[in-house]
Image (cartoon, rainbow, N blue to C red; front, side, top):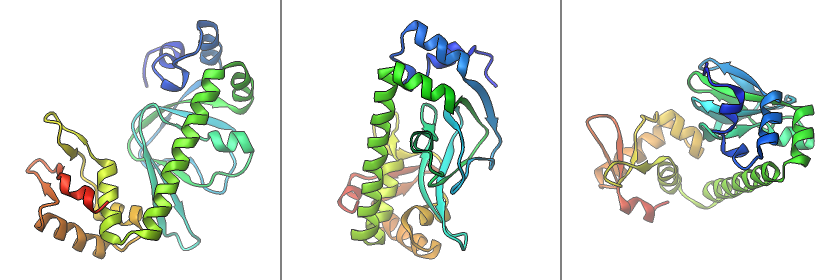
Length: 224
């Protein structure tokens, strides 16, 4: 766990970037530090909680599942992202489960403190509103992908969303993503995703490097 003070951590979180000194100190007094081990559940679909979690280090996965245990991966969240704001706002159960992919450190802000901080901090309220809009747009893209695209298009879009520029500015996926995980993102079987990935590589849309990273060619945008 970081040895930095809560106030120092608060100052590093985009959600709190525009707080005044007094506001930041008030939030720092209200938050606590939490550590989640790999695989540990942060919030669970269908359950209520009273906490806003802000990711400091690590990575979490947002998934939804049906009664038979079939999962769809909705998002992967990283430092600076936050979890639980919707349930705090509408007091409804969580619509998805959030699970730590690796050891993850977070700040936790309780419901009472959240309710007190939000009206007093317009910048924080705006940041949360902006985050909700971004997630709504992501959900719209997900619905569009599932409803209107074939498996090739859905896989292409998932890969494009994971890619970040490398040192040469080329879109690259640095960490290995399993075929099973891609299948859960795009609503297809692992076998189908494996066939699509092989075909994309054979046709020069993607290239797997020796270090395991994946180069995304510009041509892939024509599919996703």
